[in-house]
Image 1 (cartoon, rainbow, N blue to C red):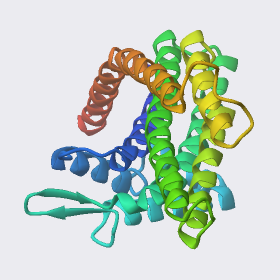
Image 2 (cartoon, rainbow, N blue to C red; image 1 turned 180 degrees about the horizontal axis):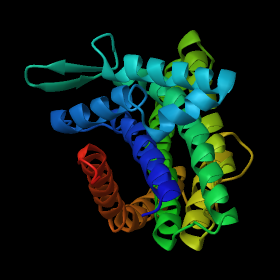
Image 3 (cartoon, rainbow, N blue to C red; image 1 turned 180 degrees about the vertical axis):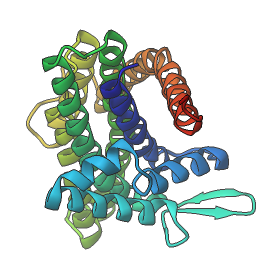
Length: 284
């Protein structure tokens, strides 16, 4: 693995920790404390140690400092004792799903910013004939897996909130209420974030585009821009979108797992070898 490849793998590693914070917007019976600790260690320490990400921020003046502050706040908001979203308890992790929107509004923009930094390094490697095939596969798999996880978590919130919105309107005999207005604001935020995820996507394979089409069909029906297809219910439309998303998640996760762990292990081995060589006495 050459130098620029090590930098790219390191950046992808950090961005995967940002992505995996979306786990805390999905309803689960339990959340692994060990995985939380792993993410916490990376999110907090990678911007303190002399890592490629810290070096990049140090070299990029005001923009670098702005990103550093965002990442420090990210760590504080979700991986510190000050966090009100995810808290450690004796029996595991406590997650406040009432703050899902807050998680989305942090994760999605930060992931896109870090992804642009990854692409910057990929372009540099390509222009200098240093782009290794495995790196291209890793970046592609990671990009695709992020879109899948983002669609899964955001659509789950969207459909749940839309159900709550309809319930609030029914209970008010079709009238708008402060509660329905509040939910409507959240729905608008989620749709905007889904748009952000779609807008910045690099992947364009058929499975991805089929997923996007199914999801946007549901969104356009929700906001009155499209009619429910004849012979179907809105529940059918949602089920079709969920099925497409589920297939996309499974496919992209499998591709990501087939390359990411091996690349991380290679990076760790290279770093350990470099550290060992640096401490070995040189022959006179």
